[in-house]
Amino acid sequence: MKIALVGYGKMGQIIDEIAQQRGHEVVARLKETPTVESLNNADVVIEFSNPEAAFNNIKFCLEQQIPVVCGTTGWLDKKPEIEKIAIDNETAFIYGSNFSLGVNLFFAMNEKLAQLMQPFKNEYNCQLEEIHHIHKKDAPSGTAISIAEGIIKHSDFNSWKLEETQGSELGIFAIREDEVPGTHSVFYRSNVDEIELKHTAFNRKGFALGAVIASEWIVGKKGIFGMNDVLGLS
Image (cartoon, rainbow, N blue to C red):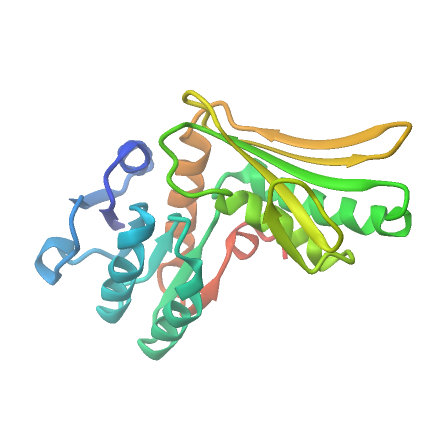
């Protein structure tokens, strides 16, 4: 495939390396807003930029009928608009709050655990925690939001909030520390014990590999997809 990388920070550089290892050609490495010329006839765009730029980057690429795999978080209030643009232009779009295989298995386990814990909601209090490097601009992380949404789907919580769990609001502690790639934990605590579900990323390569696998999968498809579709978990 011909891959255009829109957003060329640390993640973009790792994706570049893995894409080439898997036999693909990286035809664009963009730190600025893409243009028709700079996309260089790409088959697919992998977008890892920043929350301020993501919407316009994705919109432009979809309007050129190029499928987009996006891992940028912090812009999701505009996601329904992007999905409509993808459908209207008969192309494909995948958003992943986290592309790693381990995290997507974690998402599935998290939902199963939430179902198991629901009958014991009066005995156990649920709380989320996420730890990331100090350069991360959004809080909570997109991954933490996905985890929270998975719990909310199978519980009496109706929303999430930063800090302590209160009533019908599921709490997320967002910690920024050193160069931590990403650690996510779900706690169910009672007066007598604690159940913890935890995923710890050792580096960014798992995220990058998942994004490349998603880009391989999306070419030739039309519609809105997620990593569950790519990995066959749905």
